[in-house]
Each structure stands twice: as structure tokens, then as C-alpha cells.
Image 1 (cartoon, one colour):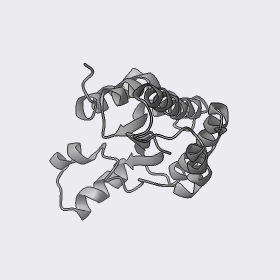
Image 2 (cartoon, one colour; image 1 turned 90 degrees about the horizontal axis):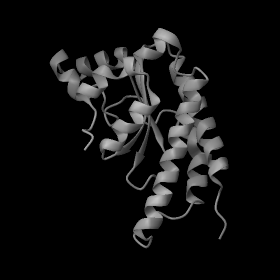
Image 3 (cartoon, one colour; image 1 turned 135 degrees about the vertical axis):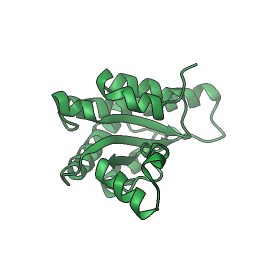
Length: 182
């Protein structure tokens, strides 16, 4: 059985994420969080994002106060932009299905290799988009956290965030959302 190459998968993840994030960021809200979210099986990613305006709307609509914001601010599941641009990822989903299977029949070592390949592809795609200025430049870039996150979360999400973001962007996220590094 032949599998889709890592290079082809990277190109397609980057293309889908670029289209989706560029469309999302055009809506003129002030975004502070943009992430690719995947599962513990490293399945095809989905977008999650938060803007300051969306957070205020969410708090009002759910009768929460500003003190509750710290529990919601970084939550992909509550994000009104979770799965934004999902149609752009249809081809990516097909390509992920052409990679080695991630199921109970896979040895732990094979699982780990494929899992790490998939996460590295997603992280590289976000790094490339950042280098292209999709998430801003200079001071404006310091106002947004980008990441590739596995749910449920673990410390590797923190390590990816530290690699993908300038230190100036990380302070609030590290305090409120980062999983401790062992």
C-alpha cells in the first residue's frame, strides 16, 4: 500500500490553513488565539480561534462575567470559530486517510513515529504561515498566540507554543492555559 508523502501532506495542510485563517482574519476582529486542533490520534486538524470581541459576546450570551473569561479564553471547544473553514480541509482529510493507520493494531513505536510526523507537519505549516505574515508582524504579531494542540492537552502543546510564538506573545497564555512541562 502506498501512502501520501509528508511533503504533499504539508503542502495541503498549509494551503487549507492559509485559506481558512486568511478568511477568518479578514473579519476585522482582534484575534488573540489561532490554533490547529487535533485528536490524540493526530487526525486531520480543525481550526480554533478567539478574538477579544468573540470572547465578550460569549460572556454576555452565557451570562458570564469577566472573572469567568480565564476559563473560556483559550478553550477550543467553546470557540465560536471552532471548525471555521472546515470545507477547506476536505482534501487534507482524504490525505490523512492515506497515511499509515492510527488504531489499536499499530505497534507503539510505529504509532509514535506517525503521530510525531503528523504533528510536525501541522507545526511546520503554522510556522510557514507565521513567516508569511498571516498572523501579523512586529508588535501586532505579539498580540496573538498560534499553536498546534492535541486534545486532550498535554505539555507538548506548551512546547509547540514556545517554538511557534515570540516570547512577548506568550505571557498570558503560559499563566492561564499552558500545561506544565515535566
